Every structure is written in structure tokens, then in C-alpha cells.
Amino acid sequence: MGKFMHWGQHSGGEFRPKMISGLMFGLLVFAVSLAMAASSARPNFGPNVLVFAPSMSAARVQRQIDKVYAIQRRNEFGPERNALLFLPGKYNVDVPIGFYTEAIGLGASPDDVRIHGNLHSDASEDNNNATTTFWRAAEGLSVTPPGGSMRWAVSQAAPFRRMHVRGNIVLHQYNGWASGGWMSDDLIDGTVDAGPQQQWISRNTEWGQWTGANWNMVFVGVPGPPTGEWPFPPYTKIALTPIIREKPFLQVDAAGNYSVRVPSLRKDSSGITWHGGTTPGSSIPIGHFYIARPGIDTAASINRQLAQGKDLLLTPGIYDLTDAIHVTRHDTVVLGMGFATLRPIHGTAAMTTADADGIVIAGLLFDAGPIQSPVLLEIGPDGSNARHAKDPISLHDVFFRVGGAGVGRTVINLKINSNDTIVDHTWIWRADHGSGVAWDLNASANGLVVNGNNVTVYGLFVEHHQQFQVLWNGDGGRTYFYQSEIPYDPPNQASYMSAPDAKGWASYKVSDRVTRHEAWGLGIYSVFEQPDVVLTRAIEVPRRADVKFHHMITVALGNRGAILNVIDDTGGATSIHPRVTPKVTTYP
Image (cartoon, rainbow, N blue to C red):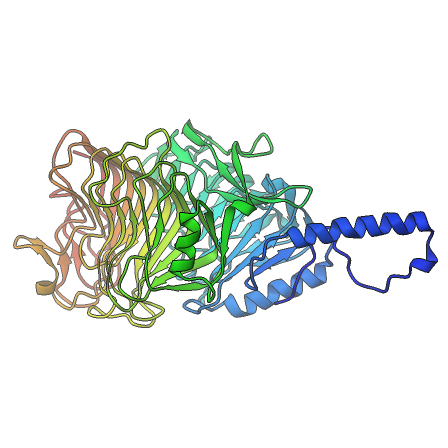
């Protein structure tokens, strides 16, 4: 990868002092010295991060972007990871976003970095099929697309954050298949065209209008949601986002100083954070972060820095961990770039936290290793009981994978013991294709287990685990949007029984001891590969007045099996011939 100049860095050419006056010479030396100081102050993000400046030629920027995309376009399970960073200014380039690629604008506002040209995610399979267009991201950019419309054809783990689209956005490729996505804190001047997208969540986003509906569309804190009500069209609308902290982001000021902006906690909010030009919050100088590098840093080296009070920035790459990373200090920020991937290789957790206020974990992919881990990410130890309502722990764009890139094994992917935790977009995936994929290879019992009270989750995608996809034991939980495919590959019904009278494991399970829980906008789907395998119920909850579910759908895909009820004994069975997709509006 090439090296890139910071603002004002000298671009080459021979310097001839005899051709200018002494005063001009002194001024030039002073200017070059400032530029060199700014360049030397830029953090060393390593070879997988490209930093672009508006002073660079468009051709040079384009060549480097194209080199990344040539690798990442079809690289679904490859080891490469990349971040494309754009310093404030204007760029006339085309920015295709492939696998494990994150495009980031470094301004305080998305409007500080202006892409005049296309920024797009294209279907990663033939026939405009975007159902495996995963693991890519765009944030902090303004895009003026040619022709007035940009394409963001994606499925899971493809966050679109703090973006300003000066035109329209299309969430599919020529009406091809697409299977879910996320946008938040975005401003779309024109129309959002969801087309055939199966499900989608939009949180705190503004647009001219929204078109399209399929199975499950959820709008939270969106001031202009589309008209219509569940189930026809399948729109779930929550006027205000009850509590949220936006994802932290990297920024650079006019003097070339890097920092990480940590947005303020908001309650009962609607719309974007940056109408005033910046997002309210606090900034942490980059010098307070330990910048970790794959192939260099280990769990031990990272833990030493965390123990000394540093925040943590994980640059793109794969980190093979022989022990867990331990986050113990309150208000620690852990921020990954370019889908930095944590993979435990000795059967430990990948990361654990203390039961402490204000910890933020964002932008990471947790990939199970070949030796079974008890858990990949654990928030607070077992028995955590502190309250964090005033300064909650928050997780943003944290993704999990078991298998696909090789054999992976874990019991639980994400376990939340701390009260008041906020989860702001997650995809927890036991692989259904790729390498190391079989019922007895990529073993994973549960995607998410919640033991803490008053935990709030926005954008919960959990798929293919072998027991409950979600097991909720804590009181006062809330889920805004749920998308889940149950496992494809149970070899027979006998191996897929949660109780003598319960075939299969419910996708979303609320424990019998829970007295308060509420969820909105849930879609649960089956694709059984073997004949005569069914699921008794998609959602299983105690029947109590304060355990409330809104807007649920089940769908049987493929040609085998069925889901017999939507929630407990309510909703009836899915059917393939003819197609029946049961819907339940409220329960109980």
C-alpha cells in the first residue's frame, strides 16, 4: 500500500533556495516545517489504513481505492481488512465498498468530507444477489452521487452511519435479493428505496421519503416515517428512541490533530445529531489511545496498555488471541477500524469487561477459534449488579461469526451481565456456508444471552445457532427490531428438541422468571435442509401482562419444514405450498 500525504505535506520536486529571497526562503522553511510536523503527528495506523487528503490528485486516490476493491470485492472469508480515511475536503472519486472495508470521513460533520462521485456497495453474488453482501461500512461522509442516486445493496453487518446523501439511496441492486440492513444518524435529501429488502431498521435518520416494504421494516426515532401500519404494509414505527449514545468516531481538526469523538447520551430523541454542525459529546485526543496492530500486538500487550489507563484503537487485521482482552476501567473506549477481528485460539473469551460505567465497544468482528470458547464477548462478570442508567455501557456495530472462515466453536457469542447496557446494532452469525460449516463443526449454542436488567437492543440480527438464538433472563429488557434465521442443518428432529413437548429451540426465548420485557418488529425464518424437521414456536415467553411483543412474522423458506406457531401457541403455521407467512400484531 502506498503512503499518503497529510495536509500540506511537501509533494516532492527539487528545492532550490538560490532562486528565492532570504525572506521567502525563511517563510518557506517555516511552512514546510509546519507541514512536516503535522505529517509526523499523524498516528501510525499501519499498512491497512489509507489516509486520503483533498490535495492529492483524484487519479492517485482512485488507484488506491481500486486496489483495495480488487481484493475485497469477492473476498467473503479472506484475511484482508481495510479502512479508507478521508481528511476534510472535496473528492471527485468513485468509492466501491467491498468486504471488510470501512470508508470513514474524518470531519466533525459528514458535510466536512464531500464525495462528488459514487460511493456504493454492489451485490457480491451474480444475478444482483446481495444476500451475502456482509461486513462493510460507511460513516461520516457526504455523497453527491452522479445521476442523483447511490446504491447500498447490502445484507447483514453493513452499517451506514452519520452519512449525508445529497440525492437518493437504493438499498438493492436492480431489484435483486437483499436481506437486511441498518442506517442511523443519516440524512438522505431524497428518497430511500428499500425495494425487495426483506427487513431493515432505520434509527434516528431523516429523509425526503421512504418507499418499499417486504417482511419487517422498523423505524425508531425517525421524524418522517412512511405512511401505513403493520401488517399491511409491515411498518413498525416508534416515534422516539428511548436512550442512545451514537457510535464514537475518529475526527481531525484544521490543525491536523486526531481525536475520537464520544457522543453524548440522548433520551427520547428523534432525528440526527449533527444539525448544528457537530455531534454533542466529548473528544479524547488520539494520544490517549493505544493503537494496536495485527501481527504485532497480543492480548498481553493490549492488556498492559489498558491497565495503564489507555483507551484502545484496533487497526484493521486479524488478532489471534491466546487470552482475553480485559477492559476494566470505567469509560474506556474500544474502537475498531476496518472490521478489526478478534479470534481466540486457546479456548478463552476474546474480550471481557468489568461491571463499570460508560465502557464503549464499537466496530469489531469477534470470530470463534477452533477450540471452544465459553463466550466471545462478556459484558460484566457473572453476578454483576451495579446500576449504570446514568452512564451505560454501550456496544455499537459488534459482529460475531462462528465458522465460515474455518472451524469455530463457542458456547455463547455475546453475554451481557451488566444492567442498563445498550446494544446498537449487532449480527451474531453461526455460518451456514463457507469453510468449517457442519452441525458438529461450527458449534454454537446461543447467540445472545442477557442476564442484566434494563438492557436495550436496537438492530438485533441473530442466526443459525443450535439452541436458543436469544435467551433473555434479565428484567426490563427491550428489543427494537429482530431478524433471525433458525439453523438450516439439524440432522433430524431428535437432535433438535428443547423439551419433550417442544420441537426445536425457540429463536427468541424470554425466561419464565422475567416479569417485564417488550419487543417490536420481529421476523423469524426457517430454511430446514432435512425433511421432517420443524420448530414448535418461533418466540417463547411467559404469559404476563408486562411481557409484550409487537409486530411479528414467520416465514418458511426453501421446500422443507415449518414453524408451527409465531409466539407460544399463537399465530399458526408457516406453509410453502401455498405460501403462508403468519403475522401477529400484539401479544398477549
